[in-house]
Image (cartoon, rainbow, N blue to C red; front, top):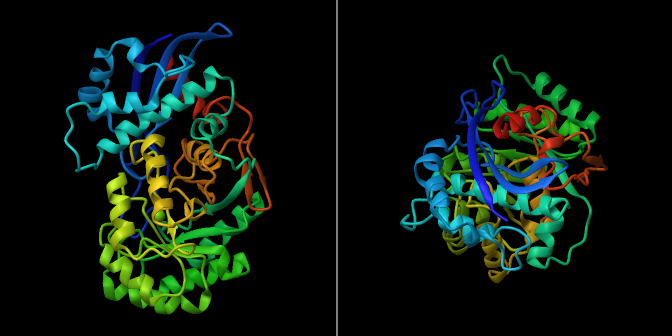
Length: 388
Ligand code: MG
């Protein structure tokens, strides 16, 4: 058994939306295919992955550095010990050959796309959904078949209004979501409070609404927002300040009773450890959002989980950034607290396929082998283009 080709394309994300700092109009994602020599129903078995959402495609790093390293490796070097599939950790290690530690940046997303595609391929070789492959690989005892999900939206739009935001959340509610996340920090505090009030009115209570500042506040503004939202008892206050400003994060955890969520812009085990050492994250209260698609894939993400547990945290405190099928399978397979969904935004990779089941605020993947990306109608043609 061997991988006969590795391909990558940069795909454009749809939508003219923005958070407090970033306009996503020009964002792209690296879609990767690992084409194996194994055949099912007359077609090669292919593993697909992508480097999550919210950064950019990593075509240069993949094509100039990582894909040549994989091409140079002996085919048998990539096989898992039992020979039933490919070893994601080894593929990630080969992709990282001769790279210095630290400075994770875009590189961690490039490796992740390859590493995640390996999991998709392995699950397809076993003809099972990826969450089962992940669960079995790491010996996870949690056998849940669905997990809590919230609709992540509430971005800033051209000609935005609280009414438009309410309509958007009502639409998610109609689809079966009962909790939401909206953006803050892109307007003055007064305007943002109107948005929060509108969201809480739709959700029915503050504990069903999270807010995300995307790292835009300094110390003073973060504390002002914390004071303003305190009466709403919101679900969490996400990325109040710069993701690497652990002192700001710690300060907030000492001065705000609600939960703080952060971690989506930490890309390695060591960065996560620094958050736990210096960021004041409270056991059983604050929320970790590291995203496997941005931090070298599932192998490194699992190391992060083990470390969290050594610090006394629980994996149920983890809600990875990135509301797409890959993270749904990872969150379910590793027994995490839940996942987010992008019901309308970041297409064609955001959100879930129609075959996923959404009920009472919980989502279950379909039985499709792998991550089930082929079931996403707007993504499927791109997967076909990549392998044909
Ligand atoms: Mg966020």
